[in-house]
Image (cartoon, protein in one colour):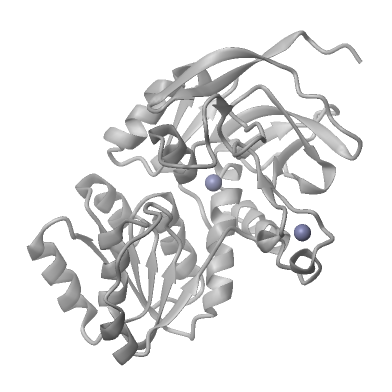
Length: 335
Ligand SMILES: [Zn+2]
Ligand SMILES: [Zn+2]
């Protein structure tokens, strides 16, 4: 097969800087397939990379792990970008997210999806129906994280939930919680426009906890505390707030990776017997369930998704880091 000499790629070249470059076309190894990318999503971890906060993302690197694209035969696909070995103890037990040698597109030495083409193992690929719009399908990977965390939590019926951090993950957690029987959902964030998006998406309460009055309001609404609190932010204060809003005997789920280390008032939580659950990524089972939720239309963020061209990558990153407005997801189009 004759490959074109190169491909367009958006390369992370320095903190706060991404630039279009000509990169060599990937070569599919045995067992791999090549995907021509139509749409790539910007994820929180790409944002940490862009800001220079992610140790495994060093320039120069093509970031990105979310994709909707086409195989050589034209079939439309999404791909699970978390590549596991399939043979270690974790993989054999069905916990591929804990594989001893996992790698992710757009991290370490593995080139990402902010490019025209990517090659990855055929086992990572999921075909999607024509009825599923690319701007919805791009949510498969972030939604897989949410499916996974609710599987770990296994909430009891009619649970009361609080979500700290109203970005993509917080919004998807809200929509998923509504489908699995949450009685009430409070979302806490520090951005008013985002909070109004989350209110429109059905949050029972959306509170700006960027000031002391807001924090007091969230605590008042918590009453004796929420059954489950998800930290979808990962900043130190957000993590502590997750514990503060949780009822005695309730579950605190830590998802956000904003800060590598932060302090928690452990003694107060010990006295409340908080159950701490940490959630990382997803397994192939979660990925497939997430895709099904998008195919059936149970979950979508259509009105809150902003699409830019890959050439506008710098602008897209600046927008999502500095002035996200009501946008909950930014995606990059390759054509
Ligand atoms: Zn992602
Ligand atoms: Zn493994």
